[in-house]
Image 1 (tube, rainbow, N blue to C red):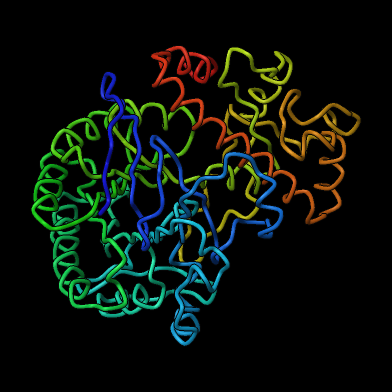
Image 2 (image 1 turned 90 degrees about the vertical axis):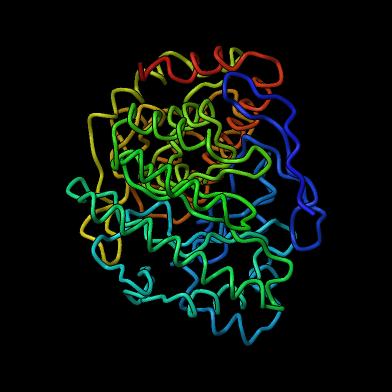
Length: 417
């Protein structure tokens, strides 16, 4: 049976591990931590063998339902679950309803279900359809079907209340099917906290979900574009005070380093790693420091900060949505598309970085690959960005154990204050 072991709680920050998790009860998840972001059951741009060259790989993997839903009948016929089908059977598998790297199309959910967007367009999922997919996939954890369509600025209070009611209704129906299913005996269902930016609805959603036999909680609808930073912090603090300490808390689409640190302070345990993927799609590399020993040079920091005034729209459109991915470059990354800066810069992408990309290739080479449209560009950038991001989470856990979290926060956010 899953056990949440809290090593320490420092000013709201939780650090510890979850033991005896997974269908075979032989996995350990450390938190605060992140899950390996995947599309179609594999890490973006990386083969399984190449992925093994990335250090500090998370034990947990996030399966994104929109990228897999169209193949669920094939997985069902395979009869051995999504882990074995994708070669990910050695990982802890968590299935999310939406893809955190893409902005969800609004206005397409309905009373009996929700919509996700696959390569062929809109897929309408009612509870029975959704649970049929979970039975075929057999993940270790899965997010309950939920109505998270409340992130638009013009969402009415009535619509927010409806999203909470629908999500609770979906949860009750999913639990009924889950408890009777032989295929899902080794799986756990996570309840979803909805409520938009309304405190009373967030608390109602949290309290009602706590009454159900769920293994943990998913905090939905806290994306950067959905609400102001201070509002998000206040809502997270209030909601997490209601949730039991012995169950994990996962948040979606809050993955920028500064946002992660704020959420950790509120008591969030797990995050997705869609941010490194978004950075890679922009042709950029993560260069933010998270250690006093960091070799990030001042010039690199200035250059990456200067890049934030520009935007890119590459890979920006989400099927079924007129909104793109988070396309604006951030102060945490370096834009290697810039010919003037990097065409003849033969230094590693990030001096001192131990990843395969930085140990073997230069900024000029990555720039060349980007300009010529070579697939290898994003393979190397994905390796570096995952390596850097996973190292960041290792640094968070270490700082909480050593009592230096505020120092880490100052280092990471020095250019965002």
